[in-house]
Image 1 (cartoon, helix red, strand yellow):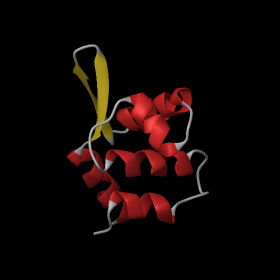
Image 2 (cartoon, rainbow, N blue to C red):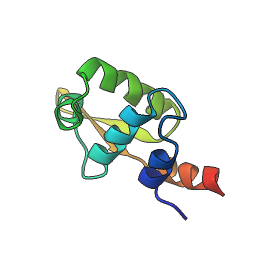
Image 3 (cartoon, rainbow, N blue to C red):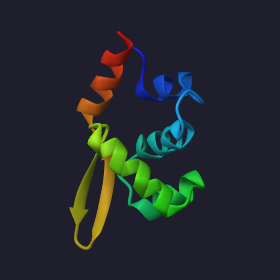
Length: 88
């Protein structure tokens, strides 16, 4: 099985926004992060990060968790498994 990051990298430039999502997946692979931190790590605007995170949440790749007043985003095991299935 191929990892989700490798899958996203292999499809780079196939679909608009895939490069940005690859950067987000790389950032979230380390730990759960708020949008501002993801934006800082990836060099992508916070607005653009939120847009992609909402789409990735709809696809089941990421999930949002509220801690106090902040929202943290993290990768889901189900999202990673669905990416692996897409390659099979």
